[in-house]
Length: 72
Length: 207
Image 1 (cartoon, each protein chain N blue to C red):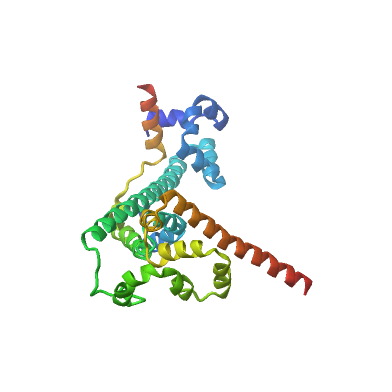
Image 2 (image 1 turned 45 degrees about the horizontal axis):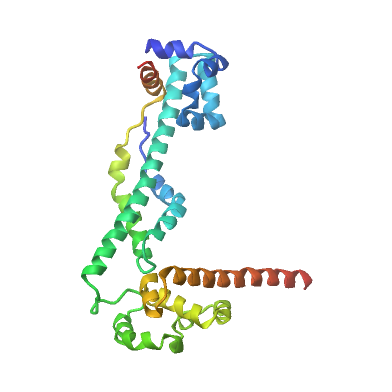
């Protein structure tokens, strides 16, 4: 199974997160905002490997984990 | 197959929702099942818990969960990176107060601006720096509506990048007052635009 993110998907994900990025620009000065926007996008693309390495459990694994946690 | 999950899959959905209510209340499961397609996969799996169906469910859930995790990861990344970036930028500004030999990309007039800075600070109002930066006619009109002081404060904030504190020191006032002047000025500008938009609409209706 290929649950990994393709690079195209990553780009579309960045685009969909654009409002969030814009909001975070308010954390810095007017003069630095364009820089920050670029740096954030760069940072996300740089951490592609990390993002691709994120692992998620499947349904059964999640269910078993949840049930054992609940028993404790 | 795991006996726990096979036991789970042998029940009907209604029964499960009662018996395992806390499981269905898990945010990830809740949102997952809001998608009708995912719900369909689950009901199909419960109807006939074949290994093929279970596999299908597992896959769909894993992809969904992975996306959610990536999304979360990126959101925190954006937030913390922006906070960090500002910290670094501030440190940089503290250490290297003026960078004279490097032009900021688009304007390329850093030296000119700094050269005049001290003299201009005394007569900011006369140079009317803010409207000279603006090309939008409506904005210039809106700026003319502001009081002299509001204009001056905006000029200091946006053209010179001074902080509320610094401006307050210049006027011998409190930073809170500067902040409220700035807020009011921006509100006025915004109001000009909304009013203007309304007028234009009205005109086009009449015409």
